[in-house]
Amino acid sequence: MNSLWIAVNIIRRMIGNRKGFLFLIIIPVIVISFITMLFSSGSSESMQIAYVNSDQGELGEHTIEELQYIGKYRMLKLQNEEQIKEQLISRAIGAAFVIPASYTEQVQNGKVDPITLYRLNETVQSFTLQKNLENLTRQWAQASQAVLAGLQSNSATIVQPDQTKQVQLDELYSQLKQHQISVKTTELDSPNSVGLTTIVGFMLLFLMGSISSAVTAIVEDRSLNTMARIYTAPVRAYEIAAGNFIGSFGVGMLQVILTLLTTTYLLGYDYGVGFGPLFVMLTLFMLASMGIATAVAGAVKSPNQVSIINNLIVTPTCMIGGCFWPLSIMPDFMQKIANFVPQKWTLEAVTNMAAGDTLWQMGMPVIILILFAAIFLSFGAVILKPAER
Image (tube, rainbow, N blue to C red; front, side, top):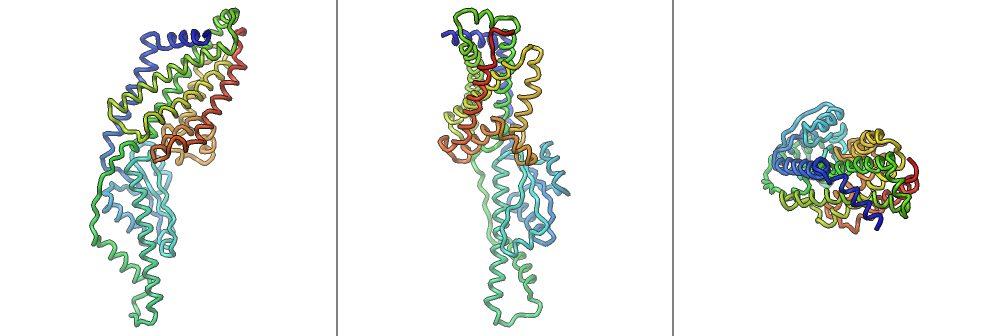
């Protein structure tokens, strides 16, 4: 009961006034709703695709020409992968791919290695582009193998001197480019994939932002000896820590519920994940976030030090965890560091569920988020000493 009274007091201090309610509830809902509308409205537009063609043979150019015919993409030729990363980060392009130098040789030898694809978000267009690249590579390889097999089986047949293997392959590629079989493209009704990681990533950013308010309230109580006075009453240290945690958690849950209700039912956005599983994953993330908040509150001694939380925890962990861009474009060592932030595991679970997995298949992300919460809450409860200023 003591913890509940402390929690109610924390909630009143965080959102019990116009300023707190505006910055912790209204503004996050408005910003995420705007981002949702932005990605939803742009889902049907033609995507700008960049490419780097390092292929020494003819299949690289054939692949680019076929993509323009099949997908009607707006193609932009670049010189190297560094330019691709710059264009992606500035959002000048929606996706990019790199054709390796030995692409033609590998395909003609029957190797079907995937072409490297870069993208900021897993969208319908980028997914379709990836499948088109895979299908074209497979088509070139199968056709090449068929020609070579035919030449070997018909070795007894009289062949003109100029009908070498390469001539046969060039003729085959020319025939494939005639497009004798027409293709009808059907738009996929899957708006859930458009900007999913960005939308959920900003949700996590705002949820982590509640750490600042929670820690500010806790540190102010310590510096003003409010906690010490509470501690003189028959209230134990763990009850004080639990009350601060429950209050901060309640504000975060209110933010989550209003955001999901607004984007799902008011704006009609389909996350590709049921309301329940998505709510569960965001709740687990909130548990981990509040655990971090409690641990930081125990370590911070002065309200003036609270600003370091945003500078050293909230924004950097969101960047490392893939809230603003995919982990695939980051260096390998940064991708390994991402395993130590809860944002990475939350986004991984949400995107996997949007791709068809169920909540029960998210064992690893769920366990890791629970461990985040348990470890940091335990640490915070130990170092949060109400009797000390």
